[in-house]
Image (cartoon, rainbow over all chains, first blue to last red; front, top):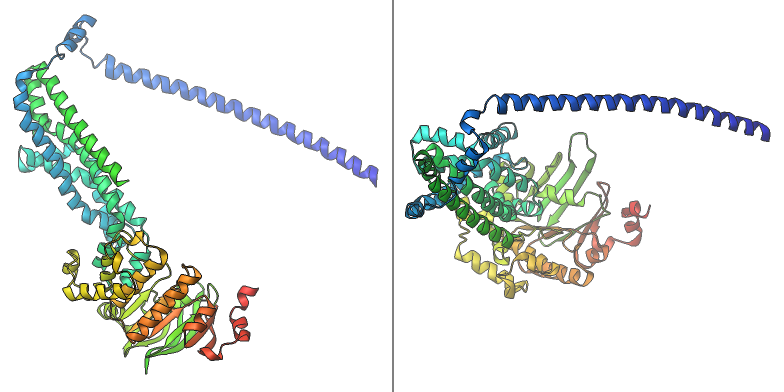
Length: 286
Length: 250
């Protein structure tokens, strides 16, 4: 009995070693193949980069215009300096930029009411229609650049701050509505049950049981979006939608390089201002 | 006279899911403090939520105050719910609102959406709320936020909110399970006292058999969606309790 078990034990050890050997061969082949694959992929990637550089940088650059390194440094140097005479002309556009951001965020928030309501899976009124509709609104808002929105609204309502406000409002919907809808999907249902039980209407359920729960998140997201909107509205003038961007554009056109730097600094200052406000408001909320 | 008459009530949450209630019948009379007891998962919460249709029953009839509950339309359902106060195990208050706003929310069934938007409740509602807050002992906490209160205090807000509805019936869903034994007793005593004073019958889910026998005059015992006992509290005894809670012993 005992010897039998011993032999059978030896046999099984032998067969295991054989099996392991086979497995090792298999793994070695696999590893070699994967090494070759990653090598080939690296070569392909390098070729792609070289080709891109050739097409976009080497062939597409006006090398004569750049000239020597000296020329480049000189061109850069033109921007160093501040145009103090421009200061008095910057105040109103800077204010306009801030106001475009504020109004745009405000109207964006109003547009968010239907978008967030329809876009929250748990409260959307008629899921097969209203939910995709809201998702479409959010995607459209976010996937089209604010400059493109501004071009569109300039074509619709003409040059000026109004086009900028509209562009910012439409561009803001996506993010605010998406974050709000997600917050609504995460609510505590106990208050909802309570308001339904007292005979509350669907509006009362949203207003009393859902809104108070998501309000801090909404405020936080809106302040964050407002901060981003200052950045956005600062460049919208490039396409004629008012604010500092327009001044920037004019300095560039008249080759007043010190003026360009001045406008950039002004933009930087109001953006820092927005960031500071946003930081303090959001910190107080959390 | 029976204010609530439930007959052969069945309920399940989905067509393929298990049947939670398997033919429950009982009557709640004008002065009853009616207990529903039974182990966890017996269907107590489902039963109580069928009465105001927070859960839709699959079949059976519920007659409340002369109304056929299962056949009510949207408008009728709203009217039904505002006539039935409800108190919850975990209070279900709106945490970020004040005690006053929470109590006033008991009037939402009587308030138009337009008034709701501005939280413009009539003066008599505010007077009523203050009176109730005085009665439940929270008059010093009117402006506090609900989440600043202790568990017992929160449930008192829940009681005031339910009574704010001028209910014809109160549904109590494990009103004391989230509270410690001493506070539980106080809260039950308060509910019973207020209910008797305002002549509101109560239907109460309760886990704690001792509290049930102490405060309630009638008991229905459920086990796995089936009635195991139904009758006045005096008829309840150890043997019958053993039957109801047999599942838990196993």
